[in-house]
Length: 404
Image 1 (cartoon, helix red, strand yellow):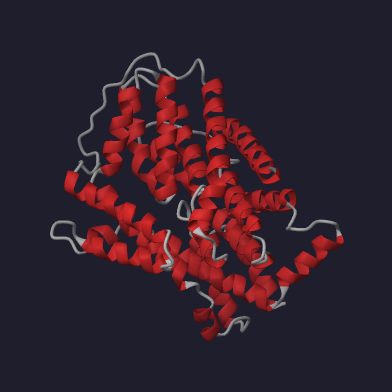
Image 2 (tube, rainbow, N blue to C red):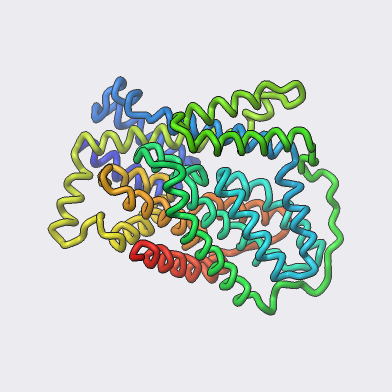
């Protein structure tokens, strides 16, 4: 009973994103929930340590170090500036920017791609006389879709891959086509909705002094790209993904010019802390056999998580209530190891669900926050105008692909 109360209070707080009257965010709420699980005896201190999946944390940490190498080497700045060469043809530029965002998000965490590219695009698009809103929405939408196509594209996929012991290659071969088709549908939707609003009346003269954009360094960027290539190659072997990622990340820290302190400063310690707290909360619920009771209740009502439509619906609803990572952690104990398709559907549906509403994905919030810093306002309504139909089309593609 204690575990259930702590779980419900914690997840309610995560859904709200705050505690009224207190300056506590989602990560703080998750930490408080984990502390309560231990202090109230639902989970022992020893169990709290054992239930944290350290291979998943190592994978997440290593990928953040690799992405930091690319960011400090100016790779993201150069990529954003390169695609701006298509700005005289707005629709082609929208397509290219979404393809690049999706590709980078498939290989590196989508949150980091949005964090690095959103401010550059917001500033440069206004200077080029283009309306930044559709292109920034395209960045957010495509990063969520593209990240779903690999097991390293976003935090929830990393978790699913580790907990489900999924093959990197097999997952990609299953997921790349629905991701690509969903990306094309998203491009078509944005191009149609903004067919008359891709340009603004006149370009703005902008002062770029003080912009903290790492300049392109060929050597450092080359090291980062080589690291990504080596990493993907190692993922196709039998070497554990967490050890492969840490090995490659460790080699990048051995640098004469790039300070390890600067690289580790770009690690999202809040996200890693959130993972640790959620592992403890979910373990407490598992000890109380709540997942089994929920499955039994759904089964009595005729709903089985082995049914693709049911699993997708549950994933989308929970992802938009609690955000992707907490939602996936909630569903994982209910999945069996014998059916990899269920794990694939959970990964893609939770990734696509991030596009439904503004609060459904951290990547969305990053784009909105960075855009606001450059005078570009993207409202909840503006995002929903694109996000709802894009999510609907993406899920239709996923269901059709599953059926085929």
